[in-house]
Image 1 (cartoon, one colour):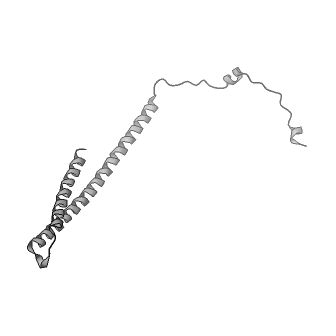
Image 2 (tube, rainbow, N blue to C red):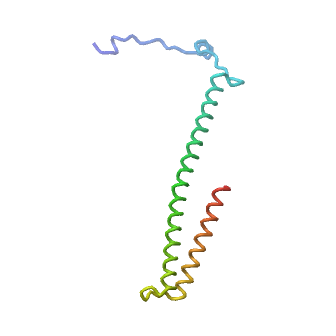
Image 3 (spheres, one colour):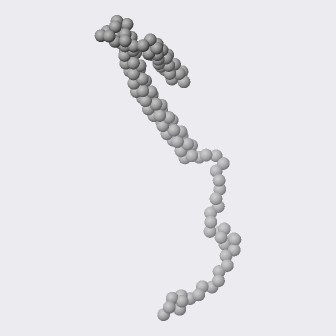
Length: 126
């Protein structure tokens, strides 16, 4: 016995639009947000604010970390330049640096110090 023989052929069913409408509940849209919508928006805003605060904290930590490193580098560079100029001025063990190199060292130290102050001031008044 085949499947066609066991299943009787259904009669042709023609649905009308009113037949379809009768089984579907009417859908309406909201004109105002309900309490659940307000709570969802409030929760999303709170999450965004928490994320912004966390980003600000991590930015501050990174700024402090790199500012400390930059300051330590500038201090070490200034000390190195000081000793180079001191050794050159005292003629320590025949130590001599050409005048152009000394001018470059002193100038670069000043530029680095002024640049660091400008960098810090810009970061403070951002």
